Image 1 (tube, rainbow, N blue to C red):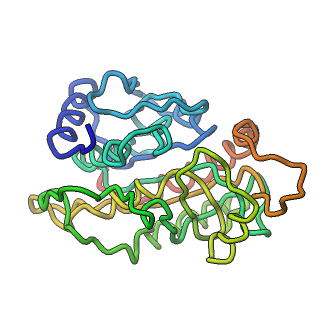
Image 2 (image 1 turned 180 degrees about the vertical axis):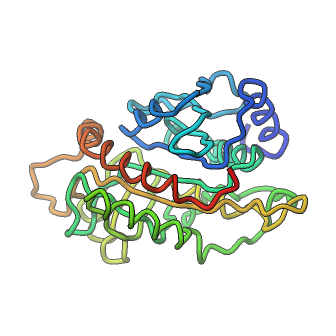
Length: 292
């Protein structure tokens, strides 16, 4: 199946309703090596992805494949412990199906996290980066999650992307980072298709066009969150997005370098990033303006 639409979104949402009676207002997507954060959820209903129809299942180490619905820092949350990626062979409309389901279930705020390579030379492994904007290289090459038939009841044909990352939420995250002595930069995330890591020439090019960090996820999810209409059934349903990258390595821009990027490096640095990201998210959640 190449296109997933409203019937597939509703089927997945209905399955979750059968397995959890909780009503989440905050959604979190946890990137490579960051999944252990989900274990802090209280009174959690843990739903393996296999039990949800149409739900994409990750084949990548560090992405366990479980949905947690419960309470975390005073908020009703829905946490994806692992995500699927474009390079795994899924259509983008299926990769982003979890975001559509969050919208149907009443989530108001979406927190996207990822593991990313640091293009900006001022970034060090273990730092966090608040995503202020992104470059959708996969979409610019023709693979956009909104490609294909458009259902006006789901969202407009041509949604704007100027303010895709919520500035108020960004300020809350920066404040939480300062209060917990966590190094957090602000920058532009660029999404590539993967799964191969970037060549040194590609890193130099990405730096030249304004990218600060590079990864293989997140952007598709943010676009779909932005796609939701301003009002649906009399209620505001557009998700507000907060994006945070965990810098796992310095991107290699010298072809003579003996260092090689690897997924194992991403997971190892996650051991430093997890407590830092957890501290920031624990600081963000109580300050969020939701109706929970």
